[in-house]
Length: 69
Image (cartoon, rainbow, N blue to C red; front, side, top):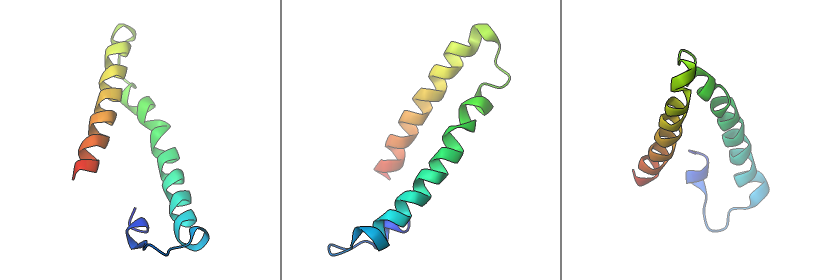
């Protein structure tokens, strides 16, 4: 995200935007795959639905709060 803060109105795609998007996509891929497995690791079967709902809600609210700040 720090790379994207350096963009100006005349920034070109290939040297300025594409490297930042690649780094962001790799980071998100490394986080969003193991996060549900970690969050639901010790949850019993009958509580898995509630735990999954809490995880999804916290991801949505966390993204909204992160954008707000």
